[in-house]
Image (cartoon, rainbow, N blue to C red):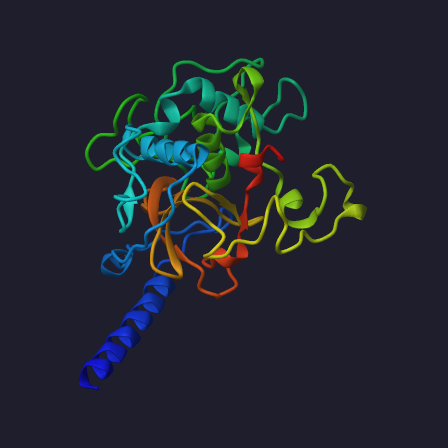
Length: 310
C-alpha cells in the first residue's frame, strides 16, 4: 500500500509539472510575436514508442533534421532533442532556388513591377524592374514592424552572409511559420508539382471553412468537419511524426517526436530568440485543452499534403 501511495503521489506531481511547463512556454501567433521560454527538459524526456514511419513521413523528418543541422541523419524520431533546441544551419539560404520560389508564391503583386515578394515570409526583399536583387546577404529583422525592411534580401543567419552553418551563437532564421513549413514540405520532395514546381499550402480559409474543395466562394463555405479526411482536427492519437499542423490565422508546425500524452516535440519558425527574427526551433507543445494557440487540439492536420488532395 505504501508503494501504491508513493506511486500516486509521483504521478500527481508529474501531471502538475506538465501543466506548468505548458503554461510557461506558449508558441507565438504570427500576428503577435513573442519569445518562447525554455521547456522543462525533464518532462520532455518521457517519450513513447511509435510505429515505423512510411517513406514519405520519414523523408519529412529527414528534411527537418536538415533544417536544424544540415544533415538528414543527425536527428530522427528516436533521438530528437526533447528540450528547446535552436537550428544552427543556414537552411533558408542554402537552396536559393527553393527560397525564391517560396517568396514568389507568397508575394503580393498589384502590378508586375510592384510586387512585395515574400510578404508573409517576414524578410522582404526589394523588387527592381521585376528582377531579383544580387547578391544575397543576411538581414536584421525589424523589432518595430515585425516584418523587416523591404530593402533586405534573403537571409539565414542574422548579421552574416548566406551559406553553410551559422557561426557560434547565431541562430538560423526561417521566416514566418506557415511559409517555413511550406518550404520543408517542398524541399522534402513530397509536396511539389511536376518538374520541381513549387506547391503552396492551402489558404487558411480553405483549411478552416471549406468542406469539399478549396475553390468555393465565401457564400458556399461551411466549417470543415472535425473528422475531415483531408484536414482533420488534430488529436494526440491521430498525429504522427512528420505531420504538418496549421491553426488557421495562427501558427504552423511539424510534429517531429511524440512524447508521453498529451505532449509532442514540434519544429517551427518562431520568435523564440529575442533577436528580432523568427528562428528555426524545435520545442515542446501539447494537446492541453486551453482552446488557444498553445493548444495543438485547435490545429488541423494537413494530411492532404501526403494524399495529394491540396
